[in-house]
Length: 292
Image 1 (cartoon, rainbow, N blue to C red):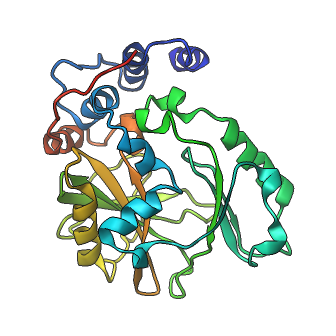
Image 2 (image 1 turned 180 degrees about the vertical axis):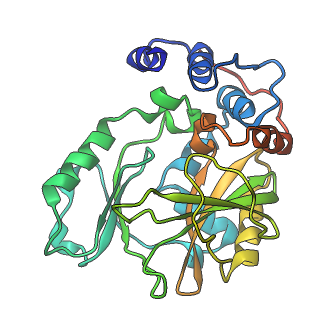
Image 3 (image 1 turned 90 degrees about the vertical axis):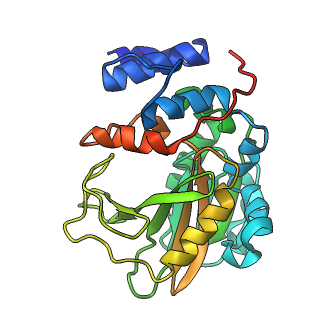
């Protein structure tokens, strides 16, 4: 009830109050912004007080590619096929048989085409246009997204010949220190929930859950695990916390995206002691200017 009321008033509630209400609705306790200790609390603090202008470029799914290529190299970038300002601008005849459409300014605005002959263009239009209208910032107060221009990009379709699945390797990095990752599996299976398995920096499985259950059989260590850690370290230098996502396709590493607020800092850990453990890894920077 409280969450529904909060979401209806997203555009008028000041950021700090909004986050306090969302946090209380999720965790049933007050958000401590004066002396945050847990990962969830520190993520809310960073939303308010770590607002560097370059963060907007770093979450823009189109603009971030040049930024990342300049740091780690063009060879890790998934090719962009085109970019448009609206769905009606897309000329599907110029696209290959398989491709991926993404909105540049949000989380979840994604459509995958594996065969143009059976591609449901109207369903794709409905999803993409809904995402283009969405104001992601107002639902999460993740400041980096506030000024990202809504656009649509088409990317090259990627699939690993061995697994027939595009697995995410999501590394938690703290100013160059890569401490943990999780692997998302079973995302494309209609009758199965996505699975998240967490591992430490030596690839030991960690016994906690955050958002999705563990897989019955933990996923294997990626071939390029050490390389991905090295790249994540480079991309996170100077940033209190960022999650760096990679794919491994046929033995090659590709950059996915940068995420400053995993689950927006609003997903409980089971057991909750991990919220404090991850919180210890975030060293808060001096406050930048905060706007209501």
